Length: 309
Figure 1 (cartoon, rainbow, N blue to C red):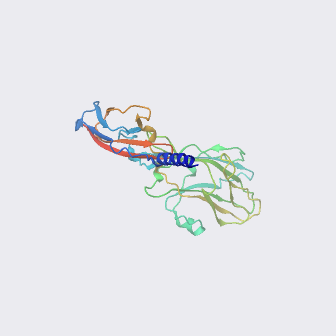
Figure 2: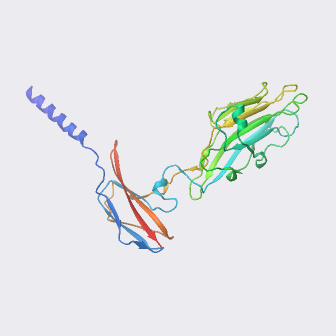
């Protein structure tokens, strides 16, 4: 009986020791360069010490900057909007739909809040259905909104439905969907700020009329639509808005995809790593050394300034 107890206790001590073994940060990892300055086309040799499990490198060149590896704000992008629209029913009337943009809307989804904002009408920038009932989607084309961006301010999109001659003529039905608001930054993957009309992206604001209003269809991802049904003859005039949430239009993807793998856990420890800088400039070369197991990872970051002139 005593022997059994002793064996079990030893087993417990063994596994406890294993579980208490912690992953250590690779603090002994260091990086240096041999020269202070280089010429374009020179191969910069980085001297590495230590033996971490993994080493990743960001050169510091545009598109490969460690500080911009996650989402970040870029002034270099081109902002485009695209959506589908269709009409049904109603008489042949001047188009009674408007597409509007604001950067000073205060987020108060009331008539007073919407009226207090400045709205730019961009309807004429879009391809819209002809002045007939098409019953088919028409793609707006990519609408450039760069001239309407304001740094530090979100952008709001609104669709406005206004009935005309409601006392004598039935009004047209409008259906908007498949919206893509995209920031296109050179050298980066296009960032889709929104790629659909999802629940919570828009709110309905009624100015005038109670017979019809905008409805937000949040079915499948491909069928998110903003729908305003046709006003029948002899209904009261309508002035109905549906307004988006604020979109951060300068945001784009980071550049983790441009990180270079220097060492993996299965590889040996390199003593040097070389990189060619083709253009003059001062670059912050960054190495990330990582030790990890299934549950834990610990890293250190080492930075070296490289001057090319």
